[in-house]
Image (cartoon, rainbow, N blue to C red; front, side, top):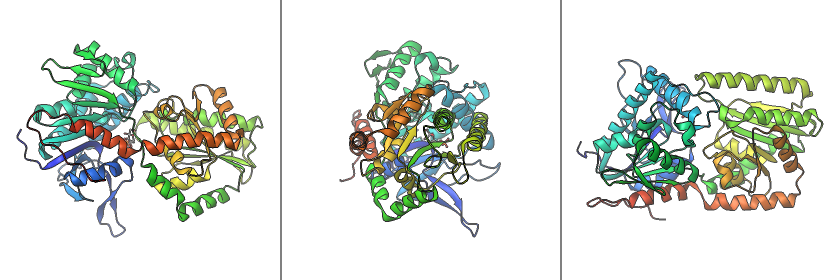
Length: 482
Ligand code: F6P
């Protein structure tokens, strides 16, 4: 395929950074979806005549015309439609019923269905074709996440002139688990189409290199894989982050400050607010966290008259069986705990099954005294970084699972094993009773990390390395000033 496209930088991600919303008068329009990734990439996209390829959400009706590419905030957006069957087999099926549980320590049982794999290959091919069509000669293409692991190789076959990067936003499992996948070799070969394969943690990169050696048989040395044609692929860690300055600014705003006070007021001005914020996902360890807290209320350590646990659970992947099952389990647990331990006007757990705008999240982070983040396994976990960014007074404690990628950077948190209920209870109590000086010491150190390693540094770091992959004759991509 020849290069007809004009984009010097192409982002390929499962979702577009916009949502389709319908105005009250029935007119459909696109609304930018909030997210660190798009804010970090926007400046560089503008300078490079960038394009973003992704699924616009929903299912394309039979016979419905494809949505045309359009320009939004200076970015060319290229929608990749999915049919209802593809949503079921590619998105809910292979992506979220096979890869998601497999890559998260098999916390739920992955399903291996051959028709899902066929849909995954088909949809990855479509993404690769769109990328091949919009990329300029020698462009950089950055492919994101587990839904699109075959795109690097498919794209390289179509456009060998491109520099291709891949970043995995979830954990990459150890060989012992990954090897369950019937299509393991094809997935590894798909990723090897990239010049750089990025992971959150060095452990993920090492798992990948080891698997490539074992299962594909290529030569490897440290973080480098050498392919039979001499091309080299580098596997390395690039821990993602948030726009910390932006969150802090939001947290300092008078609106958010007022809202945080109003939240505490609505909770009855408690002495202590514990907070959990998660997508309603079985990897997040919401159940054991609430159980640990409920036991602390039941044994009298905490009193519902002056302490409350606010749990925000954002609806997610609601048509996937495991997600439905876990929602029922959490609903039942919260109902039982509040029924048994709550008093009038004082539930033990204030449970919100909803998603909120960033302003409300910042107010919740400000209103909390202790944030409790206890995933069984999490690639990074950005919620805890957002909380840290919002605690500009250097107060607020963080209880964090050692199985979240963020624990590698935020080692001053009270680290817990989410499988150990007693250990979690002890850490929550310790955090609640810690001297303010100790809380400040820990928070200060974590804030420094989050401030210094923000999402801009992450994106720039990755793209600079990809830019340096320059076989002869390729043009260099301009960086934005500042
Ligand atoms: O963490 C992986 C991820 O795919 C994110 O990129 C995304 O924001 C989140 O999970 C929710 O995923 P979905 O697109 O399935 O709603």
